[in-house]
Image (cartoon, rainbow, N blue to C red; front, side, top):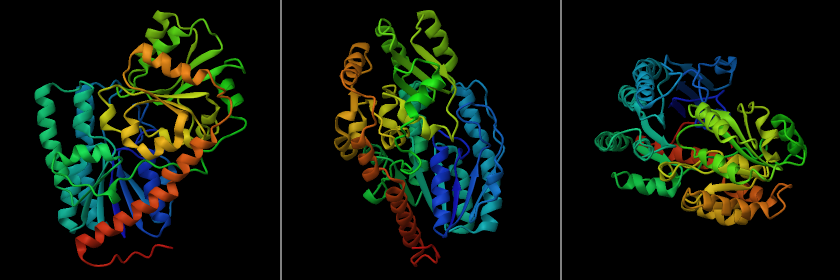
Length: 419
């Protein structure tokens, strides 16, 4: 098949949606499909334009085009909207131009952002390709829950967003709760098209040297017990909760709260930490892409609690890599509904916070701290291998794509992919 993917984010971005878009494209290219990605220049989560890698144009069966996109250095509700709009406008021209030459079988939009939908529909109209929408976030739901829009604007965004989603031939998403919410908008998502974020089990695995590496990177004592947040620092993540936890454990200097990442809320969090005089909190930059897998399993506990307004709208992408490394997770309770079989298989290595109240988070963290967390959990890794392995999920994704293309055209795909 010839597959054209239009998505805002792609590698070398190492957190968020970008790594998944690029990994999907790379897998499909390795299977013999010809894939082209249309994306913005790399910028996330720093919100600063990064160098475009040479690999964009050197991979077999895979190429990437970067279209001009305005990137705000201090993203607000309005500037984010302008940022997404700029990608939507520029991607329409590039999509039309590329699709005319590429003649894809499938044109896929990765959401966020739905601003790329006009580009997809225009290109599909010209080429008669199957249109596919893969939803990482329910953008209107997320905007509402985090207070980006007023009630009237949220209602309008939901109406427009639902209409855009219904315009696709096929829609896929990450979890059953997200599929259920989309069904209220008249969108039918079959079980075959519920495709969770996957993890490369070879890249992410327990590392005997990770504990020392992490503590050296943080500049803390070798015997410290580390509660780690690593990733994008925005409104979705309830990182304020880590500061509340740190305030409770100030009398226990061996417990360290490490916040490693970049994003629009970082400066505010650092200021709050200084005002609260929290000496048991360490801020560091995001781990390098090559360093990340070799240091992740060094934490005693991983913090993955989200703001309550964001919970029902998205599934944290960090869950897979953490579990693959044998990590233990303090997580939002909605993860139970999003991935019930995974959660059951992980067992006590995930502890849930139902409401983001300090006393509940303290109780949840205490349940971990009363046990030995110095060694990776083999049970967590085993659960990730069964339910989130890249080999399992991406094979299912490829089969779904081929089925979607055949249903649209009424003929078998002519792909020469390998077995």
